[in-house]
Length: 93
Image (cartoon, rainbow, N blue to C red; front, side, top):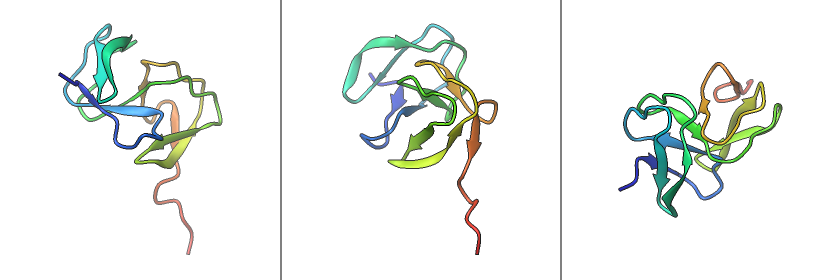
């Protein structure tokens, strides 16, 4: 059974469907083999990188750029405000 959700095929992150401890094998539709493990504890509803994301690269969720990585992010690493500068809601009138 999947423990994360990949919302759009273009996404480079998945969302935790429950609290995931470090070392948990991540699975989602299309990746049910659990080859990728969480590198740290991931809280319910938070993002996890599924591919390497280099500093300055976009973080893609919903098939859209939601921000840029403020540091290199490894597959399995928690993606949140400590390593993501958001662009959502940053549009100017």
